[in-house]
Length: 224
Ligand code: GRF
Image (cartoon, rainbow, N blue to C red; front, side):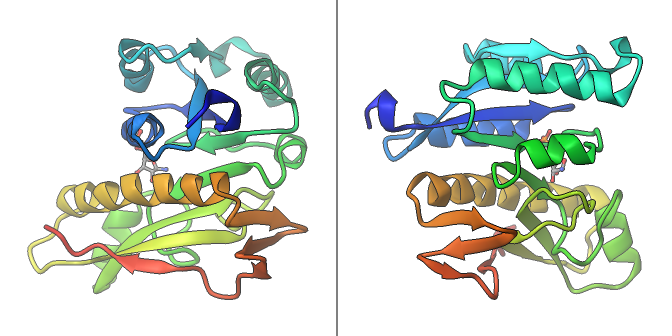
């Protein structure tokens, strides 16, 4: 696939960056239709930033602690994003384990291009600690969701989901590891569907294959 036709991606991380690496694997695969143009971490100690550098990906740290306000941090973040994109209104911004809550103005600036992956079958379990909460509730299934980001935390239009059955001997670590394996496939599949033009965002609605999506696709990942 020629470079010109690739969808540019800016990936925002705070931690290990396993989703980042999975998306990069997709980009480098023979069927990849996107390309990571910049990885941005909000803290210098994010392990994922080293892993990205080791792959030769362009990286920038925008350290949230060096700004006086969230507004100033988000201004610098937006500059780092826009500087990496070949066209200011083209490309996706992918939150992949990015631990900052983004303000309304930032979210509005990238409406329809800002995606997040969340470790639950939203609307179940927004927020943190989703694996433990699902286990404590005696849930039989858990999973992951990729959604467009809106001002409502973990509440934007859902693009696709991955269902992961909960096993009798699961603990939060085991369950989280299985959900993460599903996340890695799910996020890349969603990026691919947008890069192919099969999925897009219009006025707060996910359009799939030219029609408003009423029910997001939800594939079951039952491998151990
Ligand atoms: C993922 O489990 C994702 O669902 C959540 O944060 C985690 C990030 O993991 N938003 P990694 O940094 O991609 O390994």
